[in-house]
Amino acid sequence: MLNLNESYQDSTQTLTKTFKIFGPPGTGKTTRLIKIVEKHLRLGVQPWEMVYVSFTNKAIDEAVDRVLKKFNNYKSEDFGNFRTIHSFCKKAFGNLPVLDPKIDMLQFHTQWGTINANFSEEDANHKVFNNWSLRVYDKARNMMVDPISLYKAEPIKKVRLQQFTDIIRNYVKFKKDHKMDFTDMVEKYVKEISPPKYKVFIVDEAQDLTPLQWLFVEKVANKANRVYLAGDDDQAIYEWNGAKVRCFLDFPGKAFVLNKSYRLNKTILEFSKEILTFIKERQPKEFTSVNESEGHIHTYGRFSEIPFDDLQGSWFILGRVGDNVEELKQYARNKGLYFQDMKGNKSFNINKWNAINYWQTLMAGESLIREQVGIVYDFIDEIKKGWRKVDNKAWDAVHPNQPLDLEFLKSNCGLETNQTDWWKVLNRKFTTRDLDYFENMLRRGIKLNDNAKIIIDTIHSVKGGEAENVLLYEKSNWPSNFSSKNGKDKMAEARVWYTGVTRSKKSLHILSTDHTYYFPLGRIASSFRRKVRLNAQ
Image (cartoon, rainbow, N blue to C red; front, side, top):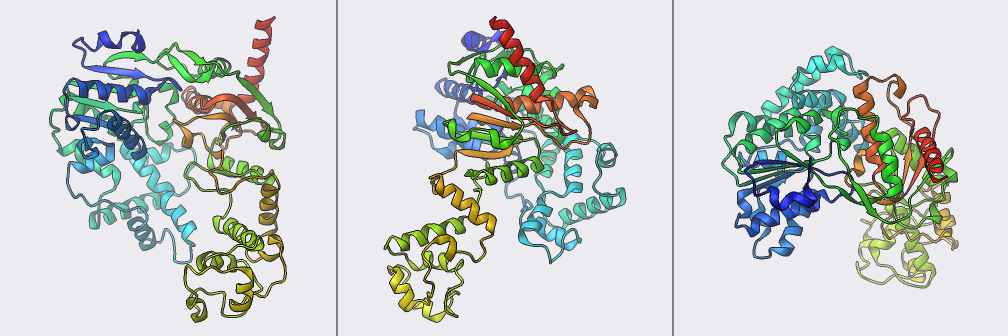
């Protein structure tokens, strides 16, 4: 196998049309793709003659922004073919009406009785976005298999077959009366569009494409002068959702490996190779570490043992599935840790923190504006009747930007409390657990206005990201023990944990468990440490 780092210049002069770029963790796959774009721009290819597809708008925006920094003679609009696959397909049909997940799908679920009017907004959104039957149906379409056959193959069935077919039938009818969904766009493109000839076609995260999406890739690739497919089959963690890594491995093209990891230190790199032994079907890759930081691997039996405050830098605290993440979040709250998830949702209600912050501002003799006082008032019982609502006439008479200090609020705005401590004043809508959590964080000097240095989420959510320190909770909620899984399922599970391990730049921490359903990450780590000690003797 040729090495892209060493041979890229020469190899691109050959007549080979398709290049498969295998990017192990931290080897700069995105940077390489951007350099490929820049190379073709310098050779005279125009941005609109290229197609660049990835899975997220964030990844696309990053690529365009980085290119524009070097080629400021272009505008972002010139890179209109840099899109997600679904967006690219939609663009081919102009103003194609697409279902809005929050509006149209809520209407569907309400109309067909999947949810009812008594659901809270949070519960309703959960039902809309996580309907099991629709997820299986969409997976079947992406895998290009019969939905009922896939239903029967699912290890855990959350609805009966009749209910499953009813939901699907109603959904198909609803779409005909309204709009198309994301998968419809790809299906329509594959069936109806004859793409123009592009000079360059780039596909990122190719290991996560579904069979349907591969049909799209093949269609565009057949008309392109040069094709670049980039990914890492060892990080193919979406087969449960219809992806087929075999399509990437079998796609014809000249293979290259990015062979230098700038993220993984030597210790974590060598440990990650222990997990790769579980993956029997893969593209062989040899790569080394250029990260000179000293690597550490630790195992713990309890969350409370982990020295978060002693280790500097960012943290990923990762669970296998959502239920495990919720456990981790509760452990973190009990320990007084300040954290957020990958979507930016913080570990506390922001209004509760603002109320604490604003009350302390008043106690320091400073003033607030009406909006800030309104947030404080939401959590105080000692207010005269009529002052709690912001639509009160007297309250409206206060100018929005008028400075309001404590004495003014007591004299003119209905505040009656004589307490000064925030935990004694702000007790309305605060639970005992809330008070303990905030008090613990404040005592430790945590600045809650800053972004949290700790991310708690699933392994899948942080794919592509990195942190100085990574904690993996090896518990899983799968319906069978790892040791009893078939070969394909074992490989799929190993890929998930390999992805989790390789997020770490400095230290790796494993919260072990004796739970029935788990990947034996702790045991593998113990064996690895023994091997390292023996080699050192």
